[in-house]
Length: 120
Image 1 (cartoon, rainbow, N blue to C red):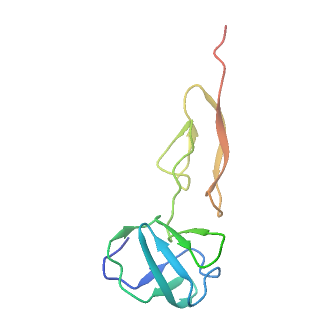
Image 2: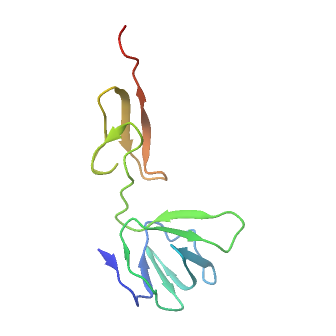
């Protein structure tokens, strides 16, 4: 599902790291949070652009940035693997070995695929 231009409500995977008054960055847009509810953030002004699920949202009020993914985030498969995304499953490509599993925390996968040396 898309978040359409003009919307002031964002569905997020974890709203607990945000508070009213925090700055929020979504792509190049910076907004101020006016309301926080479980899984929802309301911003003061409408979004100028439209965004697809999985677009990263960053809190900008503190010195350290907190990265979240919009609800439905599916991280891309890591280098050396292939598949639709981590949630759907990643498998190591030919010439690579390892295991990649989907997890609930950033970067939303665990494991990796490493190049296997060619036989002599």
